[in-house]
Length: 118
Image 1 (cartoon, rainbow, N blue to C red):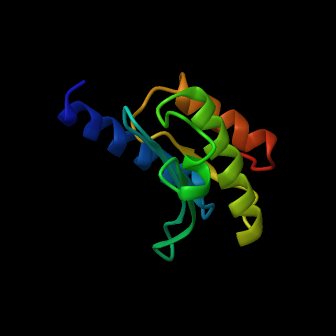
Image 2: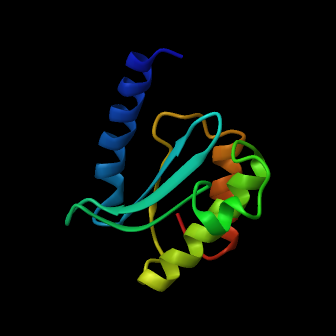
């Protein structure tokens, strides 16, 4: 996967989300081989409302490897908890050009079961 094609996919997805999202915060996911990161971003105010990742100390202590589905599930639950504390229940899912498969899908399903709706 070249970075140029990834950037094109990211931009195409974000353009569609702006049309569909209509004022809802965006749940943005980024994954690397070793870690997974997720943020809830309010694009109208340009503010990050909540974030979670496998590099956070309390998450990193519970997992052995940050680049697997178990870690993604833990991060999904964690972001849903932080979102509820911030008063966010409805979000738009931004997969950032990554396929909705594997770790990204597990993270989304864990966030949904923990209370986020998208």
